[in-house]
Image (tube, rainbow, N blue to C red; front, top):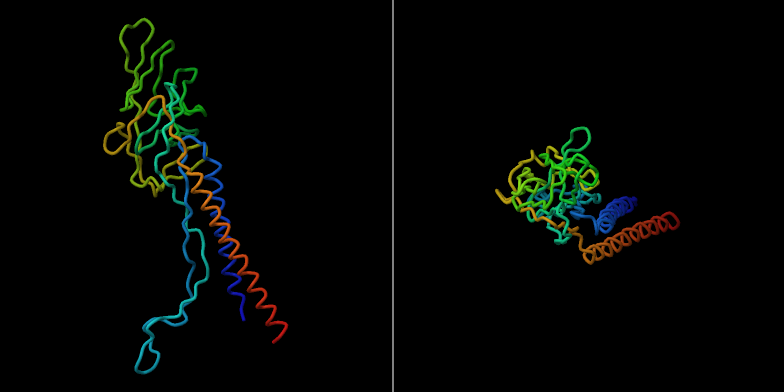
Length: 262
């Protein structure tokens, strides 16, 4: 008698432990602006083929079904669920939300371009539109000193009243980035994602056109984590972990019985 069942159950414990980590991260970010929940995807490990379907069972017949023994499970990957979070009204003129598809583009340290759904922006001492970490929103928008009544249209056009002028001045336009495969973006922490070979190159354009979302001023996008759904998934994961743990105990008892009685 082998301990194959014990090793298979161990892969189940590892997979459920990783799924619990994903759920834990989702719950930890329930109040993170623009956060998108992750879902753990499972896949089977390699199968051991004992009998191939269609192989000859006798000189005149063939097996209708085969005998394949699985070797366990593992986490295939984590899929980001990009459903939109709830709209939160803040009244802050530099709080922006993307109502629809797309990402804001920012200049990160080292020249790397980052992408985010968190639009809680502010002004730097130089008047640049920046993130809370001080990363510049691209393309750069400079708000002059003394500018008042900053208005950002749904297409990203930024305008303000400048001291000494009677009419509103246009300061620039915030562009929105989309990707052929947004799920392929790499999470970097601090609400930022970066481009990968899987995501494809960023397509920058005007908000509201070609499938890009509109920009809503004075609003932020809440996390799309559903606490009730995550708690149900957590209970399901816990039960699956317990079953795999019991499988290891049962297999251990069977091996003990064989060693002591045979």
